[in-house]
Image (tube, rainbow, N blue to C red; front, side, top):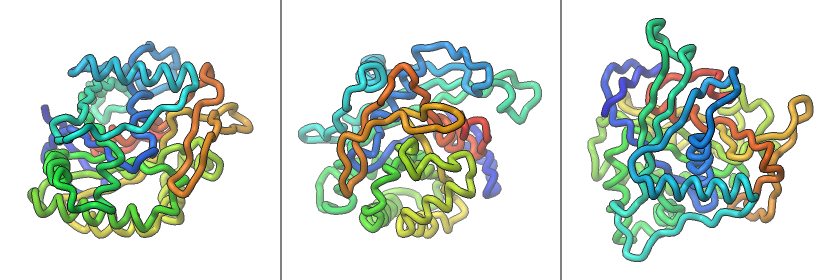
Length: 306
């Protein structure tokens, strides 16, 4: 399936495979992010102001149900979710593939004759060890398999724990190795987008001004200057685009004086490990915004805020 990519940054009329590959360090919140998306599929949306009409899953129903079970553990029971592990003797074909049909309301469409915006996307979830190997173990014999698999993706969602800024230099090196591998194994002229997504943005110091794209870029540049510089170098090609997002799988409590709906159970140089404080007041935000941009090349304020 193909979706037109109409970039707001660079002129493009070509179509790109809407397969999205999700990468990031261990503990960055990748599985929690996907579980939150799957959890939304269990509900009809009573919020008339929300731009999201519905989310349904397709494809491997066992994988989808596994995600929903994860979501119930972390969003209903407040349990800590273990990081995704690489299986023994791993190959790229063994990576879980999740399918989401995301339907948005008509006001997000540029076409006045269109009733809804529909985004059928598939997403591959790579374990954090894959990202660690990009940094520390380029000799891993399985790493080329994963990079080879990634080269087919038109969109890459790079999820980084917003509190792991002490790892900035490592992330930049990992991305440099990743990009080198992609260029070596793939077509350097292939159209590709990367959504740099700052996760856990319900935490103090991260959620303020989350609806202002300019503030988001400034926040990321202050926290991850070397990583951002590496992305800028990679983007210096007409076929490549990068944009920046914030997201939270747990959300905030309160409107006038918001506070994180998060309890930090551990914090170290690699980031923060959290559980939800009040499951009944779950209000994730920013989940769909990077996916929408990866699929269309456009941003909508209502999705950034939702």
